[in-house]
Length: 591
Image: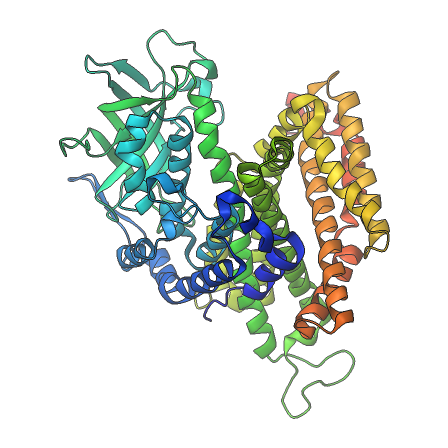
């Protein structure tokens, strides 16, 4: 089926719930009027459905092709044309800085476009997606000279960018990297080493590829404090000379086959330092944090497409009769959407997808406030929320995005297991999102081990304050007591960690994943209360789309009846501690 952008839900969230209709009152986003935002949403939906979606299946079937003689990569049929159309429409420049040819629009709009692109072809979306992260890292940390050379072409989409971190012997533990950077006489550096799993490391979509590479200078500490960041182009911008940064082969993957995942060999390639020596991790985290938010949108995008496909199937597939009596008496059977178990799977997809979208766009809105609000305290408070929610958005949206793709496949039964339907590809494509840009376990450790203690606990206090403030201001908020109860559990879990983790770090490790999930469910509960409240107000006034608003109210009820109660056993998981996890001795595993 053709993708239908969830424009009504997005506009309801942005304008009626989150308040992006007022974002143009901030000087930085003066052009982002509601009319403009609506136009962007509508055009992005058309682009996703008519230009990007047609390339998805062929991308999965053909994959990328590597030529070992030329060390080049050919992308699947149609990718080049679709990418060129994406570039011509200015989509690569949407929220990029005006000074280098960007449009300077809100980051929240980029989140919206990311979801739509990933719903329709996650592989193709990877090429401009990683480029955007490279733009941010270079803009924040690069010298003016490097910005002048690279940013305009990256923002325009004429060139693409990569992030080169992982090596064959190390992934998360980047202190172990062996790639080295030797100073040249002209101020550049000779980069030598091998990087693996490099998205878009080599392809035929653009004339030049710009690699951001982590490497170590001579004599640098053999830890993450000894890592520097370098910009290494495929072709040198001043001379057009081929730089010895070559693709050594492609990874053979279960999904996202249209995305070129490369082994990259840097054979004395010329690079330039980005930022200060031995400060590469700080610069790279600018790129990684942005990428983590983008990956969260990948999970949501695939889940949305899975929901649309499974809903369409359930409405048409005739099997058996309704338990309460025939609903299609003139036909041989009823559509399977009448069956409670099928509805359970569909409702879980719908309600979680809309809740995850609310969480993502709430985070995007805070990101915009952190960049544009005239008050420094407001910017800091918003940035605190973005920092603490980034690992939550990445992990929860990819966990549940993948789960919802699986539920969509289950709705289709045997058809979902065949390549005649797109669900099996969505499941395969979605699996990687829980792994790359830091596995979801790493996201949980980042949340518990780093974010909770930042600024003496200020980040999490601000998060609690958002929900507490809402509950105080809205004494009649829908499902108020359920939100209040979930918040209390999250506060108790946080206190448990604060008490136990300093004495035994393994307690934090054991509790990290359920704690992240508890935070996600609590935040989504808060947002579902807000959505239900706005929907009911509009219904009472006779405003808006009645069917849509009624569905919102019913969906909120489902969330609080069927999904938020998971918080109870998550709390038990957290406070039961590490003992049963760590009790096994080495000889017990094979017993």
